[in-house]
Image (cartoon, one colour):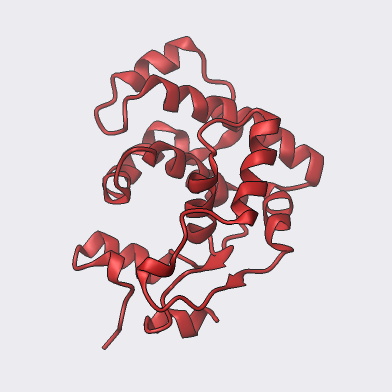
Length: 187
């Protein structure tokens, strides 16, 4: 029997996300971009809302191909604002386009977004030892530094709380509680 973090409850989508994605280190630029955009889209909403719309996002945003998204124009924005399968918030849609442009600039500067983003944890996951959800912070000094640098570069929807959720999602930090079966596997 698998023991899971309390936050995922019994929703099958949450369970699959918890068991197969959350906290597992990601080094693929496309996947990192996807999670950065989805975490930004989540602002003010629940993560389950985003998970339920993720396949729609993948279709609407061409499987999170940053180079293609960086070229979106006002016509494409209008089209996305009509797409009921995604969060139809103009600021979040425009942020995805701005972030795509800046993402590709970082890729050119560092050789990959992976090399850039993982520097905030010195290239390896931070392994925490949380006993309960109450012990998990909403931000850390690492997410503060990431947020500050991304914002300085012009990224949108990358506050420290969003950055910390991103770090958890892509395995830059292991915030599975110590009683969770996956904690030991990822340690």
